Image (cartoon, rainbow, N blue to C red; front, top):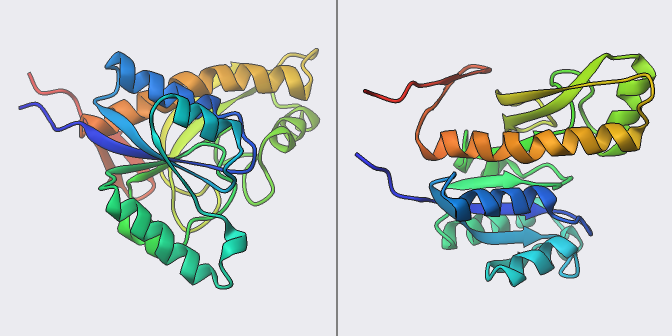
Length: 215
């Protein structure tokens, strides 16, 4: 029996370019993902990612932390916006803030994020973007990569869904390593979403098992 296409919301921060968001949109358009991005939520209306979304005909909404005196109010508003759009899966793509406990509870195992390293290494608060790649190189790691994981109440501690590996060469800089990792992010993230859309992900504690396709 075929499943109904899933409705996806993508969350972005600041003035991000939205390349991971675009990879998700492209995955839906090509049929790789049985679903569609129906909503993009950003913290700033002038972010390139928001322009990309509007150019693709996708509804956008701005939820800026500066508009709320209480984090609980922001959490409640975010939950309301997601609920009104009938969202099945929330995807963080360069969204740098923790989601509130109401959203995390309501969408338990239905919020994904991609991290530019191999969890559980090189993660946690403040470890994003070039900070991660600088730390990987400084530590002398020989491999790095991307991790797609479910989101919980903390930074980068949720169950791991998909990981993709890249080599770290002696000649690598944070810029060259970032480019290699971003390339595999663009494949790993849609892969994880496609598995979710096919109802093939089973969460068992911190492990995510991938169900085989029947037949």
